[in-house]
Amino acid sequence: MASMKKAGTVTPNVVSFPTTAAATPAPIMFGSLIKERRKKAKLSQKDFADMMHVTRNTVINWEADKSKPDYSLIPEVCSLLNIQIHELFHMQAENGLSDLEDRVVGNIRLLNPTSRRVVDKMISTMVEEELLAKDKALKETFSLFLKRPGSVAAGVGNYVPEEAPEYVFLRKNHINAKADGIALVDGKSMEPVYHDGDYVYYEEASCADPGEDVLVDTDDGAVIKRVDDDHTLYSVNPAIPYPKKSDQNTLVIRGRVLGVVASSDRPSKDDVGILEELFVDEIREFNEEHGVNE
Image (cartoon, rainbow, N blue to C red; front, side, top):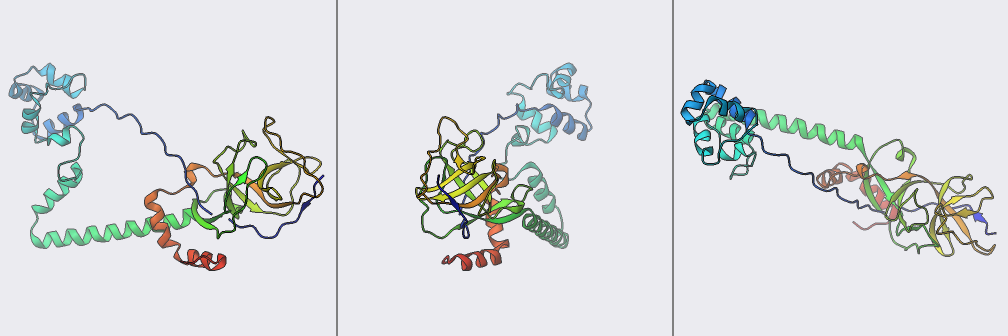
């Protein structure tokens, strides 16, 4: 039986996650907008119906989204109720502005130069306050983690490359509160607990109790396995058993697995750029500690 020796320090590197499928778009509804603009124009349903040469019941059905105006009537509806075509179809204007943005720009153009400067300063102040608040929230929500170079095999063993670790930003939670890094799982022998391509959080450890999952460096490479009652290692998936090792094979525990990195733990692509700026001191320290050339 192979012995498991105490470990030195662990080294951790980066994550990519699957994207979710786009949702089916909701059907376009005209009713609430037609009703809102009709009332704003101080027109009764009958008045509007007469102007459109349709019955009052037709207008009632439009506003209840039980039916839609014939497309030949759309230009006249928009003209009478001061609705932009793109607004009716919930589309962006040709200038790329949303309805609200278009309306704000139009209102600003009605102001005198002094009032425009006041509005500009007010908006600038609000934007700065919101950006500072978002930066603070991001800094408090995310943390910088290591990833072990290469991957850990849910099989016989994967070669651990001699390269500097990388960092990755992940959302703080109760699972990773004690984590020292993350590692990529390669293979299916630990299913259904860990799947091929999963990233797992781990804390550095040189020993483990029966039933715990560990990252182990072996003569065959790095593996992720569970500790049995007799302190040997085994695979969770019975279809892919972990072969018994001889006493000459060195097994060194590098870390205790804490859980899987969820896709919701990762920041958005836009937030990654902001986090790079917010964590500039931590990144510099990380690079100095691990000999990474910037």
